[in-house]
Length: 261
Image 1: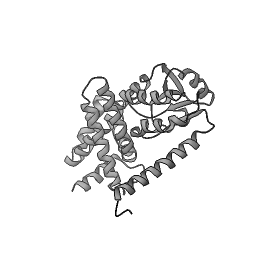
Image 2: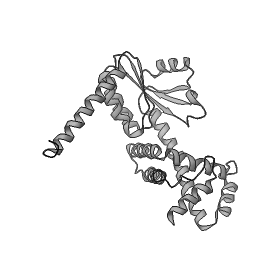
Image 3: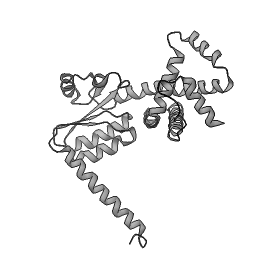
Image 4: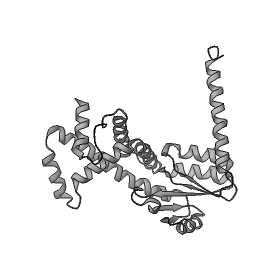
């Protein structure tokens, strides 16, 4: 049958997978009153759409994902149409070492009510708006700077290493910005992007959407996304397999240089 009708067989398998996923989502949502969506940025709206038909009326849907205001607003529309309360959250820094105390900014008509519940559980959640999009805009604008700095450091340091001029470059950075340990920060930035580059690239594409939604050409956000994706691809290809945990930035740069050669 597959040989005679491969497309039909593929559609049948896809439909069966969809039914299984829908059943799993229904079972997951049964009997709960708080749902937390914490997925990669590209899945933000997809998960909201999948969950919405199964959300009990009056329940809360807390969206922690790094997505643009427009994406969050679209997710809110489908969730609230199902009778649930959508609250967006902007997670404002790396979860380690904070754990559940990582600072979050909340937005939504019922955000204050949920914030009180979260605070009672020990979470650090601050309401910044009753409308959807403000918290995500804050998060996305910050990400352009933070992920952009990561991308700049990786490109600058690797190139400096290639030319053998890093001992001149880093001291000039320290002279201009003396509060930053550029060698230590470089090692941290390399390690974070090597480990989380794929997720960061998806987040930066949402940052590009955020910039575009504001009416600007997302030149920098798109470039940052491309750099983060490039590092993620190198990691996937095993370029950093020999780099030990806690390595210097030079070790990461040397791995890239060896791959280039």
